Structures are given as C-alpha cells and as structure tokens.
Length: 319
Image 1 (cartoon, rainbow, N blue to C red):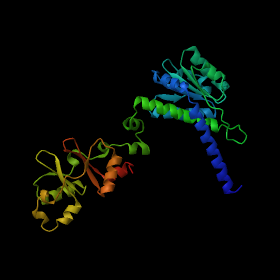
Image 2 (image 1 turned 135 degrees about the horizontal axis):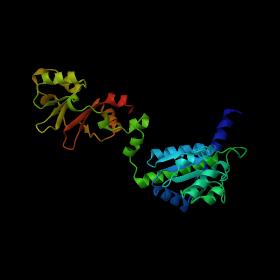
Image 3 (image 1 turned 45 degrees about the vertical axis):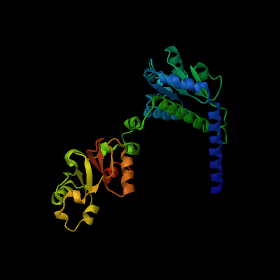
Image 4 (image 1 turned 90 degrees about the vertical axis):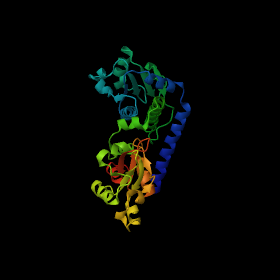
C-alpha cells in the first residue's frame, strides 16, 4: 500500500464513525434523560464497569465524571467477583457497559445491584440483551457496523460508548453549573491547572510590592525599584489607591534632571491593572498585548493587592 491508500482508509474510518455518532445523536431519547436524573439523585458515587475494550472506555468515563463534579470510580467486573463488590453500596449508581449486553464477567455485578437495590444503567448494542433487560435505565447503542474490516474488533461501538459517556458528563456539569473554579480544584497540576491559575495565586503581595507614596523623590523611588527587582514602582495616593506606575520607559523619557523630580512628575498615571480573582492567563494576555512585564492587582477601590511579573506566569506554565 502507498501513503494515499493509508489516508483513504483513515478518512473512511473517521467518516463512518462520524456517521455513527450522528445516528446516535438522532436516536437519543428519554432514557438518556432518565440516566442523567438517576445519577443526579445518587447520594453516593457512580460505579462504572465493563470488560475488555468496554472496560477501557469505562475507566475513561469514570475519570471524566470524577474530574467534572460527579464522584465516580471504575470497578473491574472480574475483580468485583473476588471482593470488589464491596465497593458498591446503597446510594451509588452503577453504569455498566457491554456492546453485546451478554458479557459473562458482568453477571455478578449485575446480580449484586439487583439484590441490594442499587440503581443500574446499562449501555449495550443489542436490544433485549440481559444487561438491558436487567437495567433500571437501558441506553441502546444504534446498529452501526464496526469499521474493522472483519466487523469484529470494537471500534465504532467503543467510539459511540465513549461519546455517550461524554454526553452524560456534560449534561451533569451543566445541571450543576460546574465552573472553571470547580474544574481547577480537580486539576491543580499540569497544563490545565496552570491555565486556570488566578492572579492571586501567583502575585507578590505585602512588603514584596514595589510601592511609594505620591510626592516621593525619584532618588528614593529608584532604590525601591532596585530592591524589589520588578523594574517598576507603583505610586499610591493619599487614600492608598494606585495612582500611577514608574517604568523603565518613564525613566528614559525623564533622564534629564531625573533625580530632581518626584514620582508624580515621572509616572504614567492610571496604569492598566487587574483583579486578583482574574485568571493569570488573562493577565498574561494583557502584558503581551501592552508589551509590559508587570501588572498590579488592585481591589474594588483601586488599592494595590499584589504585583504579577510575566516570569511568574511563565514559571507556572501559563503560556
């Protein structure tokens, strides 16, 4: 085969799976809403289970639920039969995945939910299968053929199951009004956590801020600039509000007689600021747009709360 043939195969697979997802979206009915309501009514966790490829999809769905505000974990059906059924309890909801709906390893976990009255949501590709007959809510996958040339390897079916899990997770998120702040609480590390960091998480506050009062001689202001190491100094008025900022550009523009001036005569008045609750990513955008390296964070009255340097953002991975 040549490269064009590979590309043709790839496009065929993606097109057929996209068509299957469209079919699935059109077939979605009230059972989906029932599944969402059943999960919302749970006082415990969503226990997700599946065997083989369905098990891999189940792990991902459980992880997506858990990271978006719906407590969940994966239970392997074979391990469930050897003690892990104890992970299921009253108040939980069980979400079981099986393309055939007849996977033998799922028998014990299905029976356990029936015995102890644990709500069961079944996802399968065969109407009338054991799983869907036993389930309190049955989610039937549409009859889309696997894109595997032999029609055997789970391909289209796992794609549809994964997408269904995403649809459930997003419906639950929107109902709970899940916010970026909630999301960050579950993703404190890595790139996602960095992107959701707030200015207040990264800024320098208190005595670290380079601040002088209005009327301060430039000779004293230069010492503060040097000591704090931000390359700038903020100027506060009699009420403690940030009235201006002295930058290296201001220094260059007033080189002649600089030491005979006060900060009021040199500063840039009404500088751009940001709130401590704003995303650090937004602060970085402002700094890049204005071609500046520092940004003061102020409260509602305009009083300085901290200062953020572009290097703080870069060190935190906000970029």
